[in-house]
Image 1 (cartoon, one colour):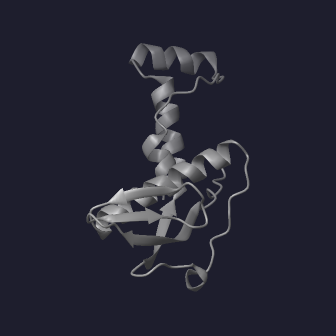
Image 2 (tube, rainbow, N blue to C red):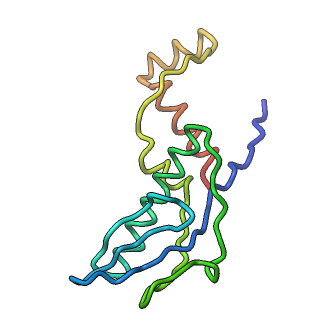
Length: 140
């Protein structure tokens, strides 16, 4: 039997974010298209990492709750305060899910009895073999 491999849907997003200088140093970083997606950072690199994680977390929840994912606005249309800077941040939701999705889910599979016996005698875990096969199938 030949397994046809379907491509995973790419879940990559790009949102404009704003770096707003704080009076005591550092930045407030927020995504205008995702209300409530805000973090603080000491510098640009830290801000990019933290806001990317926040965007992915928010999109993951929205997807899980079947909420609509907001479209990203144009960077040129973002309202800025004095000294604010706009940057574009990519958010790879597939990668984020791989990173956080370690919770095991119980599934029932059927295999021919003789294969189950052979696997058991050989000390092969059907669960591990299935996980490895699915990872290989969906990774590129």
